[in-house]
Length: 171
Image (tube, rainbow, N blue to C red; front, side, top):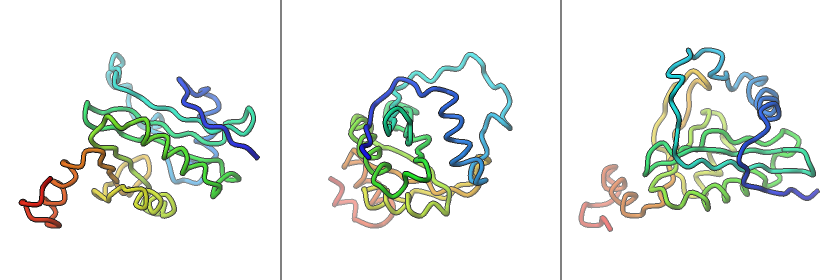
């Protein structure tokens, strides 16, 4: 099996909806926000950079990872998933590498994960992410917010703020 990875403009909506339903919603890990949010500001547009990665086995999309800038300094990884039968083959790891390669201009990269998604949380911690907080939200319930620092000075300031280094050690 050869998996091909591509940066894409858009995912086919029906394919993405099916992937999310089968891999997240059916396991009751995720409740899609479209099922409980109101219309909101219909004219609102997120204009920041977005990154969408697709992993293909032939013509079939077997993994996706996407996110968008939430401001000029921070990028938010929104959704990443791999089809169940393709998991533990390095697909998520390669998509994570591509995401980090394509978001180097941001000081911080955030992602949120269901509290029991230990495989992915551990993989991100090994990749340099740090636990930032625990939160509760309607989509997944309890989540762990992780942050990756591209900006090493900001990282050292955060280490000072958490008591890990003295202020004189801020680089």
